[in-house]
Length: 263
Ligand code: ACM
Image (cartoon, rainbow, N blue to C red; front, side):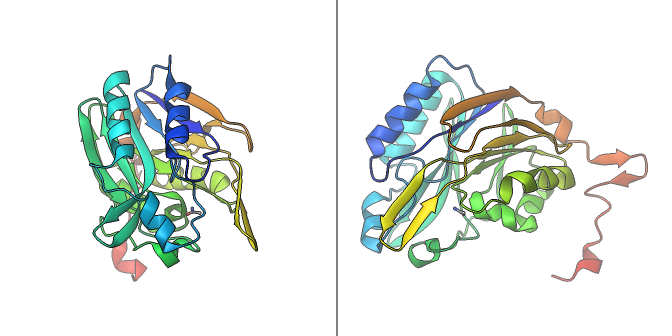
């Protein structure tokens, strides 16, 4: 199974331009699973709720999800991508999952980061895993990684590959993901963005790049640079994430002792 990410520098508010950039980046690529950044088509640094309302879309009916469905159908690959989602008068930091046969599902970010808390509602979907032709795929979004429960919930639900659309600004995630993958025996594809957004006079956000694909053994299979816009791919074997045995005596999920952990 060929997995990949496209790390790039989305321009705030220029949905069409950002989507066109993704479409041209994948032309000629033969992939099974593509992961795009959090808020890949809109940019990240919202400065008002009106702006969030203007750029958010319902899903699967919105233009961004429709474009992803179309791209999935045309290219024959599965895609996970982040977008601001509107449902009635609530807004979620969401990721949609599409495949060659259309829309598959949606995840709403559980742990909101920084000023996202001003504009978005904490996700209510829980951590979901979809059984597909390319394996069991789960989703978490950016800051969710900071909470070990996110990836553990996905592992307990049977995820073999965790798609992780991100807009990372803190430096910790790329070096932490090998531990998350090792302790849950699964693959993760973290797709970050590059660039800086300075849409508020007193606040500039620089995104750290370093998108990566990590194996169930905690190996970094590919990692992008800090500033480079790049599509990187690697062959992975999701089936190898099924077996959680470390040795004949230890199984990483079965050996858990939830009664000893508190809540
Ligand atoms: C983040 O959750 N965008 C850091």
